[in-house]
Image (spheres, rainbow, N blue to C red):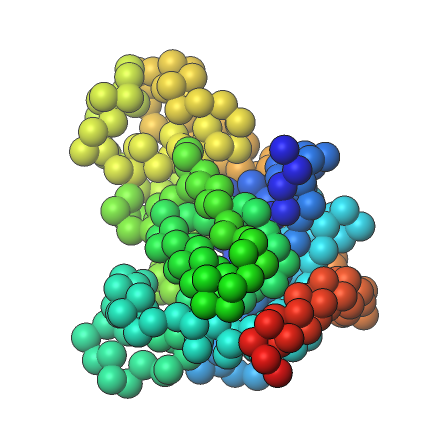
Length: 333
């Protein structure tokens, strides 16, 4: 079956191993399937739901684009663009805001988590950004969207909006209700310092994450200092219960090796962590150091990165603009 894939990454700077294994590696695999048409977006409109330094935001947009390309996304095979260059996203978002219901948004758990206790001080944008996410997807007739479990609810909202628009305006099949592509294994990479917390750039400790632009020495040092427990490595998956740090490190090794967790457990069964960490550090360096080198090289060529984004935005605009024009006619504009 031919699939139209859409996904986006926020340009928050310092993309890390969790972003790579949880999303970008999968993007590359989807792109390399000849049955897929892929569109990958640097979602800078989403980024401003929290206050941004304008100069940092520009830098982060380019850095995210560089990470895409360095990781294997091919701007000749896939459309790579930044959201703010395609005005249809903002226009579509407003139309869908008038279709979506308050009750739907009130159920979004991500807003509750991000806004925290003092939600009165959160921006309106943070509250309604799932509607913009729906516009991102629906403008391109995406059939499938790679999402983490934490974004699945937002994709359901996109489906609800598509179905209600089609019903309200008697336009069956005008908007396609997309299906989720949920990565079953190694989608959540945890902190190297706390196996109960997701790897995050907001963690104050640099030792908690491996950044995609880290040097080989930095990678090796972070793996060496990663938190473990006093037991030897397990003989089977059941023995991983209650050992989040061990499970996380074995998961990282498995994902980078493209093998099952079970196979990794057999490989290292009964061995001590120091021996495993040496192998893991070598593997992470082997896979991530070339990406780091390429990111740093690409960041020196700002004109090239801007050209990739501009060319991609032109291609995206041709698709999105047709959809928004038809949408306006349906609405009565």
